[in-house]
Length: 124
Image 1 (cartoon, helix red, strand yellow):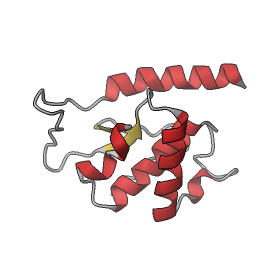
Image 2 (cartoon, helix red, strand yellow):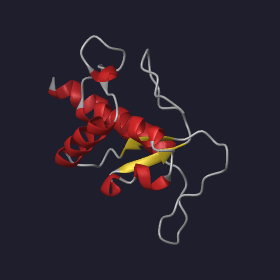
Image 3 (cartoon, one colour):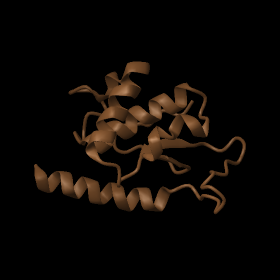
């Protein structure tokens, strides 16, 4: 199990590094091209306590049933994966404003669809 978690975290780190939305040097503000599809995902460097808090907060605001066992986004059953999906559901439902993907600095806005397998990250 620990090896699977490490492999998943490594994969997400590589994926997130490739997906990081460019930031401007002045204050780290993100530049969004109007009409461009964006998603919100957890930073691979975020600690587990923060990810757990993000997951709990987001799921208290939106329907996270896709994360339940037997549903399309249960696997990989990792905190970073589940937090990313929940954070994106929240971000999409609140209008895709950059501040809806802040999560105390533990999230990234990406322009490449992070969906995988049968788990489709919603885009509103």
